[in-house]
Every structure is written in C-alpha cells, then in structure tokens.
Image (cartoon, rainbow, N blue to C red; front, side, top):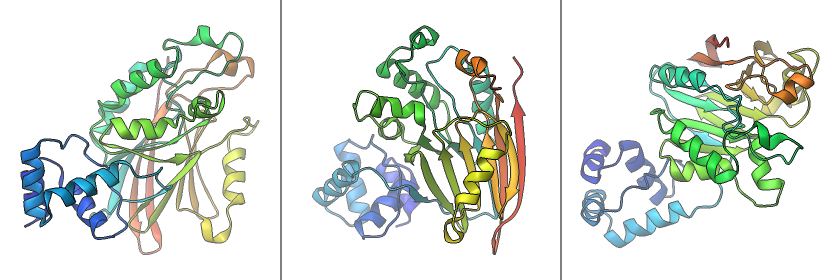
Length: 307
C-alpha cells in the first residue's frame, strides 16, 4: 500500500507514516510524531496496513515519544526546485513590547510559504533583573508557554526553531532544566526543535543554520554576523544563516554564505532604549532556488512594521 493509503487508514499524515516506518527499519529520518493517534481501531488499521503487529506498532510509537533530546541536524526533503520560507525571530512572547498585530501579519504570510523558521527567543523569560517583572504581560513559565502555544497553533505550516538566551533563562537562571523548544515540540504537532543556541536544517543540498548569540550588540549592524561567518571553518560553512538576538534586519553575502539578521516581532524595550539599541521590527520571506552547488539564487523580502 502507498503511504497515502496507510495515512488515510491511520488518520495521520503521510509524512508521519513514512517517518515511523523508516525509523522502525533503522533509517535515520526525523518526523514529528502525531501524538493524537490513540484510538485502538485506528492503531489496528495502521498496524495491519504497515505489516506490523499492534504490539510492535505501540512499541515503535512509545520509543519515538520517549526519545532523548533531538540532535541539531534535521533533513527535510523537497521535490521542487525551490523553497519559500518565513522567518520570524525574537518574538519575546510575554513582554508588553511583543507586537501581536505584526505576529498576525506573519500568520497570514505563512499561508503562502513552505516552512517557518524561528532563530530563538520564543518567550521573554524571567530575568530577575530589577523592574523586569513590570514589563511583562504574562508572568512565569506556564503563562508564557501557554500564550506561545496559543499563538503558534495558528500557523499551519511546519515550524523549525531553536532556543535563544531568553528561553534559556528557564533552564539556567534557577537550574530548572526547562528547554522551551522541546516543550513546544511535545505540544505542537508541526513544531520541530532544532537545538539550543543553534541548529541545522538540510533541504536537499541546501544547509540552513539557525543561530542565536548571547552577547552584546555592536555599533555596526553587520559586524556580529560578519564575525560569525568568519569563525566558521571551511568544512562547516552552511549555505544560509538566519541569526537572532540582535533585533536587527540585514542580508549580506560573506564567504559564499547568505547571512540574515532576522529582525524581531518585539518593539524596542526599555532595556534597548537605555542602551540606545534600535529594534528592526518585521519578518523575512525568503525564496531559495536550488542548484548543483547549493543555492542557485535567493530572493529575500523583508516586511517591516511601523508602530
């Protein structure tokens, strides 16, 4: 039977069918597990169609759900000669400066793309900085992650993201060990956590890196991303980098790497104002065309927001 036929019987997507069978066969292929498959009749139909016993199928599904933290490399095959991506970064959900109308605009834009990328700082976090709590609309991890899920669930396309330094506050500040991206992956069927600080996505012969720094800004907008690419050794250079953290929007081409500062969905905070740091509010829509050597051409479009 075809993957589509099995998917129809099982009530899940063909991609989920393909991923589970490949994992069962020992093939290294990642997929988002559809955690809503629980009906025993659905499970039996899927088992019969895939040539597995119900016990074997439940064991495969159980091992997949309890897998350790994913590696930072993911492969996403594409049959077309191009891919269109929406890049939203530094949403800082939970802060008063989070721009919900801009996020709603990004949701509309996501309907016309293949995938959505997020280079970190999903949540604002709880820094412990004096006065920070008065800048928040959502206080504490549970409130912020719930708001984030309620917003992200409106995006129907696959989302690939990493954790930024604000997300890391829930892991490091009080040694709670909470990895925001892993929690989002558990609760959102279309979300894939690529890692903490950085992660890689391979689409055919295109290598895309998401990166989130943990240092201060620079006088020159291009300086930080330029130094990042210069730090890559020859064998580890990706084709494209989407960088978060600095709340800047920029595209440039360095050492044959297409480099993006990803902008922000958050207005200038009191902290940034005090440090005289501008916030480039908006998101990117980037179309990449494949070639034998990697990126044949790239079409970057930045959608700015003016408050």
